[in-house]
Length: 315
Image (cartoon, rainbow, N blue to C red; front, side, top):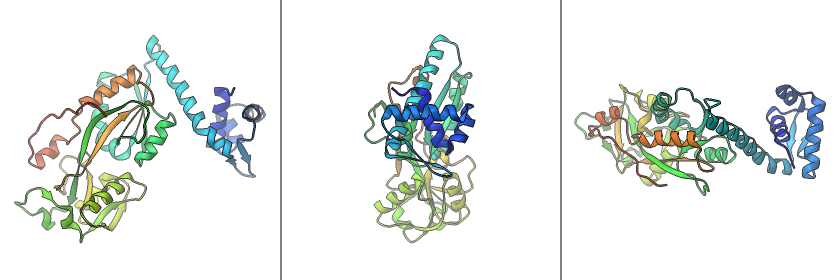
């Protein structure tokens, strides 16, 4: 049976791209690394890597084994951490995976509350561009908890934690943001505009394209960016309208904000591979206490009543 040490050697060689650099990272001799790796290949009955002159390449067997190796190592690390938490021998570390836009919009306030309640617990954050990348990383054992849209065909626990509303951002002198106009806009009224769009590898690009398609058009692009805060700033500068999560817009933002009609929103869930340990469960409780629908400063700008919104239970 493959040992955790051998699986660690496999992942190190793949990550570093060579046996020499992997041995240096692991602080062992290269012959020792090669010997253990050859034992692993004998155990599985075939080569896991193809040795190239300047690199290594996974064989089909190696590609099949690598995600399970990473998951096994992550599970072993979490098992050790959980045991230490239970015995009080360590303060612990929470591993959290999410999307870039959620990291900017939702997490600062949530992690602020977490830090007050658990000052001795470190947080290691893993950020991803797209929801499917997040789900794949979580399936490979990257983190204790993932925060993102509902995962597809997920076998572990999933908890609904709230819904993000998206806003149209534009320049304050834009005719659609004229004084006295209700802060709502039909996306179809912007069909002839050039938009501040997102790079294709950003999940926000899919949300913008889908919202515009539902309104009957495909958005023309003035400029593309990867991050919601940058898109909002470009839109406020007059490059074109954009669509961003409301919770990514900072207080005292200079641009005009309008609510799409019909609304554009994104459900958020927190999910784990297995039942959450006590530390992960405590973080889920923090998320359930957060009013994620819309920040108070945005509600005031849109002339909406301030209210504390508690998310419903269930996936």
